[in-house]
Length: 351
Image (tube, rainbow, N blue to C red):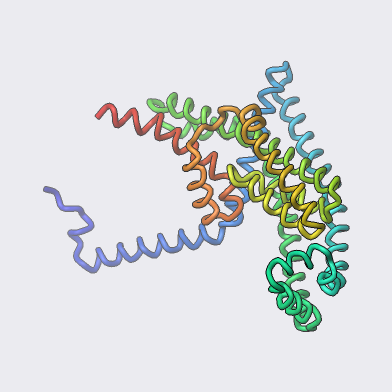
């Protein structure tokens, strides 16, 4: 049996090479950790691109040239982003201003509101100490100094988030324009003997993920619009903010709509218990319609995986990457299952 050359050079050489390998691995891990934000943004842009690309293919099937189809999708994407910002930002700023203006007065008057009196009596006066603590805390100057520092950090985060959104939007447009050349470059790196199977599997994954992401965006937009309309009709404050929050929340598979239901019902409670009951019932009906009517028709069978794996994937993804991880958990899980089904299982059957 031949002895590896590394082991014949003596313990010093072996220890030196092993130490260099460990240091290289640590440096590589540190570099990846430092680039985590950039890699995450690139990953987001790629997923958005996969969601937009089926539209390009649909336009090509309608006799559009490839260049015209890409330009049409790019223009539509930019216009949609601008429209959303134009509609959402003024409402959110106005209602945030109203919220911070209302908070001091609201704390002073909360004990005189009918819903508070009813709930407080039901719990035997247990809410009174909590309100007194909130009023005392709100009147403490140190509290507002801490809030000011937090607001500054929030402002910095919002500014960074704005630049990140612009970066993702621009990178997405580049990905949409050059996706075919990117795929061709990747395919050329695969050995010719395995290239056909790799291309077939990659195209199937790309098509499934794109269809799923496009469908989920449509469902989330419908949920956000319904939330805004319902809260506006019921006279609930901050309908614009709740609708803006509903869009990313409802992108989370399975549990996103339920989380939004609980959130909007809780916010409606500050208007009145009756309003909260109406909002809760109507949103519950909408969630059922979304689950059993809209989702099968819009998303279809683009991605078919067990619900238990969706929840596990969302939990793991959320732990690793936060909200982004929860959002991409379903397509990533489906891609892994597809690889197992198309590659691993057939190889195991040949053994």
